[in-house]
Image (cartoon, rainbow, N blue to C red; front, top):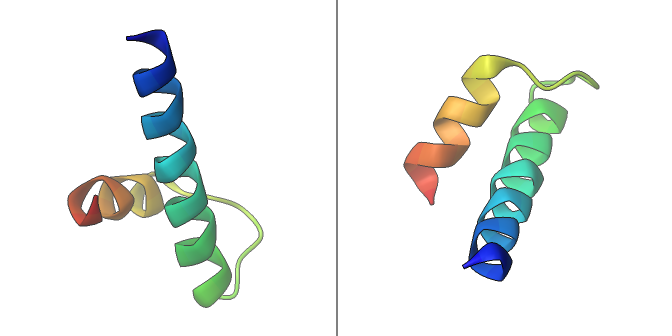
Length: 40
């Protein structure tokens, strides 16, 4: 269970980071995390 949750968190973080970079930002915002959750 712990491994699954860790993998899930890493996937969300990577997607949110990519979204922020595409928007030209270095900072991840709540909107990035929300959108990342919807995409996964």
